[in-house]
Length: 381
Image (cartoon, helix red, strand yellow):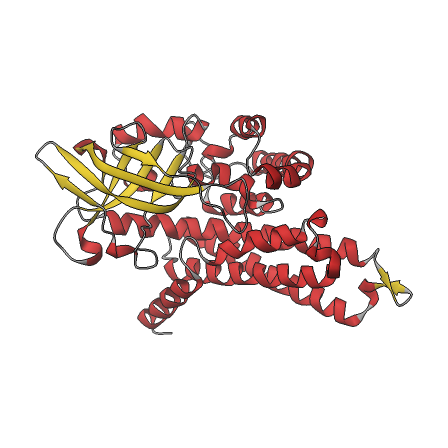
């Protein structure tokens, strides 16, 4: 259920001020330390950011997809690592439970996820399995009472601090996606171990690491849905996650455009501000137009999802366009700033590196193209 307009406007205003006054001043420090300050995480909990998408009955804010997208745009106006702190609780780490969990599973976990008391992660990718997500090799063997889970997951966001993993594992002999099931796996089960966080190109402060499962005994009641439904659950989770990421991309693009305009109106060359030079104006115009297109597509698709429409194709299109768009905007921003754009002090080169990941996770641009084409053909045009 959507919030009443006055309450939602107050939420947007609070998030906007939190981003501008609290988070943006910390961007360089987060980059340097590769960590989010603990007091900031606590403030995020107090604001309810960990429970944006979780129903009010479980302690969340219960935002619609459209409302969540608008909040995500605001959160995109700072380094993406801040959003990633609670992003798995809002999206891929919780939505399998929201969509397919039993009443008992929801009651046990969702209140703690919504409050930020526990952090969640989504464990799908493996050393040999990325875009072909139906080919997972991690196995869960049922012994009559519980499952024995073995395998390795790779590049798992928030794995270093996650308390609960949604794990995709093969439970049967059926090939491909039909043999994959989903499980809720607490971090403290014997046999679960976490690798060292990877050194990444960007998004410092948001950690990814391997998660290893060595004959982990997982109670049967921790399975999400029926056996063989894991891939279907994962795809539904990713549909929503792709819209959220698309909205973040819009926010980052709008932040970059504002930074470009501020710089171009004060930086002078040839006796006048560079904003008065037509080739600079062309880059600003292209960036603004593309960001407006992405914003419209994201918000329209989010509203359609809330209305119960099939948005598989539209979600893929939003993710594909918005993630590619923000890469182009970041590239133009470096160009507009010139030498300053390549220097760390201005923050442009940091965002240039940060946004590159958007074209890879939650489905690469190439996977989105395949989905868009497949759904378009299925619909007849």
